[in-house]
Image 1 (cartoon, protein in one colour):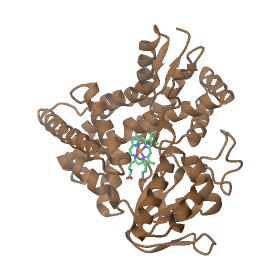
Image 2: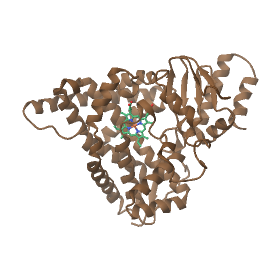
Image 3: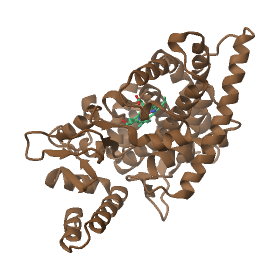
Image 4: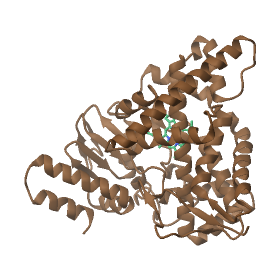
Length: 425
Ligand code: HEM
């Protein structure tokens, strides 16, 4: 039975409206985890804008997803506030379109500078090389581990935040990411781990910020790291963030770097291993050092297994999405709205032949990094790290995915949580 038949059957049985809504929400969330593509394909064709419950709406067509994300005055990011404030303090992703948001994001753009790109290419390539070198003698590579360690090391060296040691930094980033972005049911075990990680990370960063300020006061030059720049910018009132504000932005950005990049690498390879001719094309581009072609293949591969399937918002002012169409839906304040970016990237009205793998699509077809006000601050960092990591793996001779009894092990929207590859040692 398809999702909608099952969903309608719950309502048809009758009974307490709250119990019906609860059962329908559970069914939706289960499908979203287990088979988001199947769920969205069905919704896009039959009920593109569905009020899953009176308090939860999902929009699935490309134009409606962009409409929701870009109407920031009606669809707020406030829903991120409770978790982010508990774990790290106010972070830009949880700030609506206020003067404070503009000040914070502008300062962050001076710290994460786009003109660092050439330096980041060298660093990301070197980090990926090191991780591949470690695996060479054995002829097997734990891609999940590599995909997490590469961005963790980038955080250590470029952001200037190594943590007390690498495993701890990775654990902090992972524990906080899982709670903020995947713990929709508020599982206390996940929440508790994240709370501890947040406290430890706050204490570590407070000390690091104090140490950096003391070193600047004694005349040391500012290191060209993200944290070094943020602390150095405290000297100028126009770029000053208080210590706790720097700390919150760093925790959010580090959390937004490690698992996102890792999941994007695994999603890319999940698609490439499912499509051997595309894997061959990617290997050819990597061997020719043709970065433009390789990047185009990665964006397209991520479309089939994207890092995130939905972008959530809280409706704060009544708004009609897709006004004037037969799928128009008026959303009331207090409603959780899921803008399904995965679904949008398969909308046949927006994309030509969406089921086909076509690496020459316009970049506007992709919503990997969000849209409008909160579009990802780190997309240029992510692009470099993704490409350089994926490239190093593609260059391995005789590359094969190891299949295991749990394979493909997927979670949170059809993404593998682990993957190993073999190659000619
Ligand atoms: C492949 C890797 C990445 C993916 C797929 C990704 C995806 C996203 C998405 C979808 C959003 C928008 C969320 C929303 O609107 O609710 C976002 C925002 C954000 N990302 Fe990323 N991200 C990645 C890597 C990074 C990196 C490396 C950084 C490091 C700086 C970063 C920092 C941020 C920040 C600060 C925001 C919030 C921006 C704002 O509120 O204006 N992300 N990211």
